[in-house]
Length: 264
Ligand SMILES: Nc1ncnc2c1ncn2[C@@H]1O[C@H](COP(=O)(O)OP(=O)(O)OP(=O)(O)O)[C@@H](O)[C@H]1O
Ligand SMILES: [Mg+2]
Image (cartoon, rainbow, N blue to C red):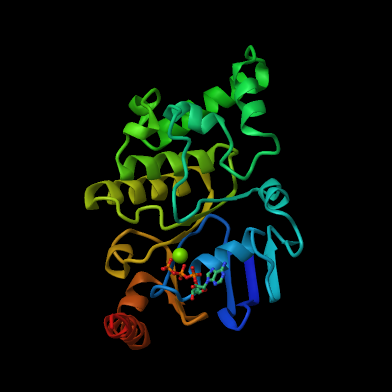
């Protein structure tokens, strides 16, 4: 299996704080991999360094065999990798389908006014293709009925789905999802994971997904789980191997104890 992502000795400091100390892992083509770990252990920062949003302090990141160091987020996206953010940021005044047609905030070159104007232009072939793709994505996520709903009227879980859909628009070969089901009710969260599993199996896309709830992700059919703790990879393995790993259990129990102690 060829690797689509190789992170090696990644380190990120914010002033005196070392958010990511030493992180190395690989993700193979067509894998569905979970990235878990206690609050503040450096998961999102790892994503931010991979996706070019933050400059890493040291280490290397290769995406599809290419050195991603120094590349801007849009250049990394052009390699075929897209990510979502922990906090969903949809265009609330637009419908679901319009949100899919517009690139996410911070990832388009023009101002919002130019963008809105371009949406109003008569459809050319490229725009027609994008519209077909948007409906295809809604079909894949099994929510075609939501196309013309205003996003401001969606539940938190439905908004997360639209966000995932938006990240799939450019047909990425590697998708990084930062807690796509946080705050989503159990049944919908499971449906989202089932859909992602199906999309991985049917399209050969690779997905790396951050999830904070360990009990939940252990039951969601991911191929492999990478466990982080305090800026490092604590272990990686199948859900069964993670479930039975003493160090993982202790890291989670330790983190729970710390957060209780923090409330002074
Ligand atoms: N831009 C930043 N500036 C300064 N410190 C930061 C910044 N981003 C993250 N941190 C700090 O780095 C550490 C790791 O944060 P990060 O968001 O990567 O953790 P996480 O594992 O994603 O946590 P969570 O499960 O809460 O989302 C934390 O101590 C956080 O406060
Ligand atoms: Mg995070």
